[in-house]
Structures are given as C-alpha cells and as structure tokens.
Image (cartoon, one colour):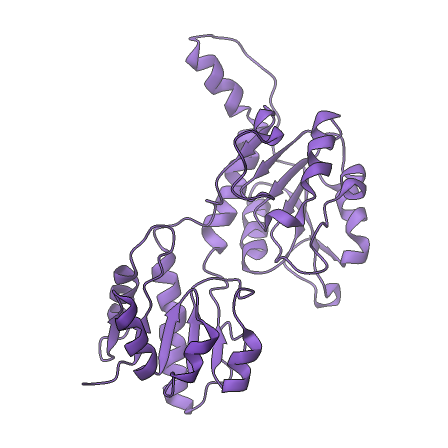
Length: 318
C-alpha cells in the first residue's frame, strides 16, 4: 500500500464535504497521492502513514502514531484549539488558513454597512406591508472606519472601503509596521480611533489584548451615531456592555456575525433591537473555501519538496 502524500480528515467546513477538499487538492497536485478519510479507522490509518495531514482538529495523542508526519495543515485560520507546543516538541510543522476569508468576509462587512446606511431593513418592512413611503438614508462616501486587526481580512476590507471613499484608521499590535489603512495606531490608542470612527469594524484574533476590548469604556468612546461591526470573535465585545449601550442609544447600531455566548440564546436581548443585524457566524461561508485552502497547501507541499525542509511555509505557525 502506497503511503499518501496528503491525508484529508473527515471534518467538514461550512457544510462542505472533505471529499471536495480532496478533489481541489488533486486538481492542483495531479501527481501526488491525496487520500480522504471517511471513517475513524481510516483517519487513524492515514495519520500513521501520511507526510501531510489536513483538517481542523488533531488530537495530541495522535502525534505518537504519526511517524511520517511533517506538516499539519489546519483548515481554520485560528489554531487556539490545537496543542501547538506538542506539535513543536514532535517536530511537526503547523500552518493555518489565514487569508482564505479575506474576500468573503470583507464583502460581508461592506454589505452590512450598505444595509445599515440605505435602511434596507426598513425598506423590506415597508415592502412587506405594500407601503410606499420615503425615508432618510446615509452614504459611506466621506466617512471614517476604524479597522481593528490588519490581517488578511483587514487588508481586503481596507481596499474595498477605499473604493467607497471611506477613510480608514487601522489598529494593530505593531503600528510601526504601518499598514494598508490611511493611518495606523496601536492598541494603546484604540480609544482615539474609536472616537473618530463612523464605523468600528472588528477583524482581529481573540487574544489576551482583544478579549473584552469593546467594553463600556470603549463604547463610551464611540460616537453616538457610530456603528459596530464584529466579524472577529464574540468575546472581543463585552455583550452586557453592548446591550446597555444599545438600550441607552449610546451607539447607532451593530452588525454581529459572532456573539458571546454563541449560539445566541433565543431569549437574548440582542435579538430585540431593530438596529442590530445578527448572522450565525456565517460571514466566513464561501463556496471557494476549499479552493483557496488547496492553493495554500499545494504551494507549501511544493516548497517542502524543493527545499527538503518545512521552514518558511505560507501561514506557518510552528
């Protein structure tokens, strides 16, 4: 039996079958053996034999049997669910899916902003009642957005905001590196960015710094006509503080693709606000997910074969 070059685990992404991921990899690597697991037994067998394994979860104890493993290509951008130290100790490289979500999540944010400013919810309610009545709207042109997090999503979003004539202020850990936004500040100056922005857009990872970043103090710094958009992680926002700010009209509204808790309970007060748009952690959903993921992994596999090493890979975490 030939050992596979790549083993695809059974874990699904956005309801898409792992077989689709395997097909995308075969298209890019026609001369490589790509195996897709369909049962736990097949997974265990493939993990023991493959040089590269790709999926979402990888149990630490699996490393003991993965004698051939050089790389685990995580199918998520976040790797907080993995025991990174264990991979490092085992000499196994880890990459993530950073960059895969740039186009689709940035489109989601633009759609959310346009929906707020053109009052599409009100338009829909009027249409449901066959009611013809004009109403005031706003436009994005000439506004300012604070983009918290300047990774692939923040970069793609900044490009789209620029096309709409929106000035941007980026917030990142290392402002001295600059960025795609018109201005860049550090987290020490995040309140300065919040106070200037018509739109506060969260596109950052969940870390010790960003957990609870948007608390009552941050919401107090935001403009009363400001909108909050969260496509990061739910705990970046203090939910109780957000509910209080919405009840007191301290901000104009919010779009939340992620919440804390998640899923959001049916009786949670956030559901009751007409100026809040909620989606079920769906901004990352795209039919091109596996195609973009396969592009990254195919590039990394070729690099490993050319160099004979697992250093300098795209999106390398370990």
